[in-house]
Structure formats: C-alpha cells, structure tokens
Image (cartoon, rainbow, N blue to C red):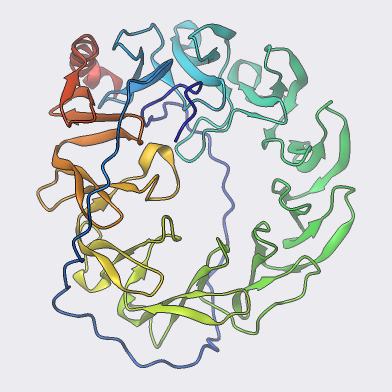
Amino acid sequence: MLSNKVAKILVFCIYILLSLSACRAGETSTTDVLPTEPDVEIQEEIIAPTPHPVERPQPQQPEGLFAAMTDFWTHIVIDRYGNHHPYRMVSPFDGDFAALSIYNSRGGRMAAGLIDNDGNLVVPFIYSQIGAFDFNEDIIFRDGLARVMSLENGGLYGFIDQTGREVVPLIYERAGHFSEGLARVRYGGLDGFIDTTGEVVIPFQYERAQDFSEGLALVRMDGMSGFIDQAGTQVIPFSFDSAFGFNEGLARVWIRSEGETYIDQSGSRVMPQVYDIARSFNDGLAMVMTRHGGQTPSNNRYYFIDREGNIVLSTPYIILGDFSDGLALVNDRYTGEWDEGWGFIDKNGEVVIPLVFTSVGRVAGDRMVFHEGFATVRDIHGLWGAIDRYGNTVVPFEYHSIVYFTSDIIVVNENGEYGIMSADGTVRWLDAINELLAQDAELAPSRR
C-alpha cells in the first residue's frame, strides 16, 4: 500500500522515451544437460479453482496529485477532487517528487521540470528529461541526485539535487542512476564511474558498463564481459560473451559456445547446466528454458530451478514472469496466439487461475503482475476487470481499460471517459477531465 504522503498516480505513457538497454549479440547455441523428462500433455479441460471468499480492495480518496492519461499520449495532472492542473505529462511519483513535461514552442521540443506532492514547481522547465521517465521505471532521485538531460545542450547528461542545483554538470554523453554511491557515465565514447560529488573514481575505459549491484558492476572490454568492484579492481575476468548484474548473490552469464548459466561473486559457475534462456533469481528461484529438438515453441520446455540448478517446477506452459503473490503468469503455447490463453500457476505448477484471459496488465506500473493481491486482466470480449489471487472477480469486466489500480485507488476508463471507483464499486466520473480529454481527441490527428 502506498504511503498517504505519496501522491497516487495513474499509469502513464511517455512522450520522451530514452531507454538504456543491454543487447545480446548473436544466436545462442546450447548444449542441454538437463535430465530428459517425458512430454507433459496439456489437459483439455481445466478444473475451476476452489471457491474462496473474495478479498475486495478498499479504495480511498487519494491525497496529493496523480496523472490522468488520455488515449492520445498526453496526460493531465489532477488532484483528489478531479481538479486539473496545467501540466500535461507526468511520471510516477518517486518519493516526494514527480517529473513532468510541457510543450516548449521554442524548437518544438518538450521541456521537463519537477513538482512536489503539493504541486509546487521545484525545478523549472529547463531540461529535456529528468529521472528515468520511461515505461519501466519511476526512478527520479537516487542517493539524493537525479539524472537530467538537455537537448539544447547537445543531449548531454548531468545530475541535480532536490533543490534543483546542478551538482554534476551536463557534460556526459550517457548516464545511469546512482547506485551504491556511484553512477556510470560516458565521456569520450567510453564508460566510467563518478561519485555523488561528481568526482571520477573509476576511469573512462569500458566499452559498456552497468550500475553497481551487490558491490559489483558489469563492464565490457574488447567485446567480453566481466565484473569490477567499487575501487575499479577486476574481480571476475572478462571471459563471458554477455552477462547480467548480480541478484541474490548470483549473476547469469552467456557463453557463446555453450549457453546461459550462473556464477557467484567469485566468478565460479554454481551449476553444470546451461540453458537456451535464463532469468535472474528472484526469491530463490529462476525461470529457465531449454529446447528439445527444434526451434518451434512446442519443443521448448520451461522450468523453475533453485540455486543449485535443481528443477523445482516443470510446466508445459510458457512461463512469462517471476512469482508474485505466489503466482506466476503463463500462456498456453498451443493456442498459437499471444492474445489468448493467459492464466496463472502456483509454485506446485498447478493452474489456479484458468488460461482464459487475452491480456494481463501491470498494476500501478509494477513489474510484478500481481500487486497487493490483485491483478488486472482482459477477457475474451476485450473488456478489462480485476481478479484476486483465487481468480475471483473484484472489478467487473466492463471497462475499456483500468488505468490505475492499487488497494488505495482504482481509476477506470469506459469508452474514453475516466472515473474513480469507490469501495462499493460505484464510479465517480471526472467530468472536467473528460471534457479536456475530448478536446485532446479532436487534436489527436495533428499529433500523430
């Protein structure tokens, strides 16, 4: 549940999208050393879950500000009474602050600023980007500093504090967020690390670097990946074709001639198995996939393994996410379509919510599908509702979208009109906001 101090926001869309991504080159050729398991046939009929008392959310009137999203890639910031404010796009609140944007007619670009929970503008609209401001993250301040970028300054990056003071000048070609006291930055085409005073503590010498995690940072030299500590000392040699950061003491690495596996912080492999696809460990488990005799989906096998590589769960379904609230999102691969066959299994591999949905949403921007015991899902008629962990319907399937959902606030969209749902299921429609959205609809063709 979000703190009362923190403003409740709607799921947002980005007008400025700057993504930092790590790409893995080449095709994976994997030697599968998992024990052979008999093929598991999918049951033609899925038994309905055992009835369970419905655990309904209890939405309250939100305090502070949050953002209303239109269907045309714009936002309107509103308060708990539905009154609108002059800002047009906003990120999720991160602590006490949210990044927002307005259209700057000078140069035809968007300008980014920063507001607090009361809607006060604490950083003026002088930057092009503040924080992460993308679909996957709501990061603004880390270690007291926020990443900023200015297109008018050549697209260079720097960092500001919570008063808006530039602590690190905008001189870097690329920048990550501060993590464990250091931030990766690029200068002269190479990556290095600075501290919170802007001092360079690890020289610019890497082709690519990632943020520090569990005391180590993934770096790349001469086309190979390894790990360094905060002093810049090489801890794990550059011996991997690709790698990912440490999580729960293990990092997944890719060896071109073998496949994906896991190492510990000494660089030692912790299991003999290799996989075609592997994910990072979460709560002691990791999802892996191996191919059995071909490239078609029907030949793929999905598992959850423990830290020693033991199979703790095998399923005939495509596993699409880690466990959250004890459930993992899966899809029936034999349908042949990604817009159907979504459901959930428990840690025993049992289907507890039937594979009958056509899409599943992320709740309140969370990476986990289930959040506070609930998930938003779309039915076969294309309408959205919400379910609890037992598959009970807690929000009826009658909305075009559910744009924000927590146990504090539920905001729904029905035929382009937005409203706030109360605990008894009634909806208070935001007439002033919907009028502005109608104006956006008229302007939409000129924005595309």
